[in-house]
Length: 124
Length: 108
Image (tube, rainbow over all chains, first blue to last red; front, side, top):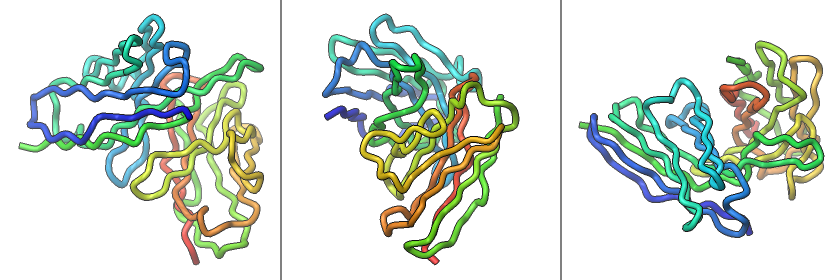
């Protein structure tokens, strides 16, 4: 079974940084892109960025670039999302998800499956 | 950036009824690169449809997706009790990838 397990909830103060982890299992981790998505409580979803664990290539949503860093360690099948200079507006649930791939159409971009989510609260 | 507008915001239906959810894109979505997800309270989203009309593994055939120009539709042919949830669309044809704001399907 393909599974992504994220690290636990975090409470941080404005200006601090934090790193969330996402451990994959049940598949060949380096071969599939991992994406990160943010969900403010009661609101919609925002794509943050993706990483290809095989070579650590990344793509970012410009809205998040410079504020986050996505990395991966394929030796321990884990991807990371680092949030820098936290502000109250970063309070949200953060999800990792594996990007689906269709060999027939050579396309990817949907998220399946998802991790369980990591709740980040930023408060002074 | 492609803006996805979902309608209605809330759909109140009874079990057994048909649900039709809309996702309209502000510009053309390349090659039908659109997905649909279901999210229940306290859970992560679950993939239902990708490529506008391909069902994900394990998704019942009462869920179907279609496209007409910049309009995408998710249809649930007969609502089961477990289908009452929030549904999101997502486009991955153009960066930045974007999501719709969601449609809540509620029990009437």
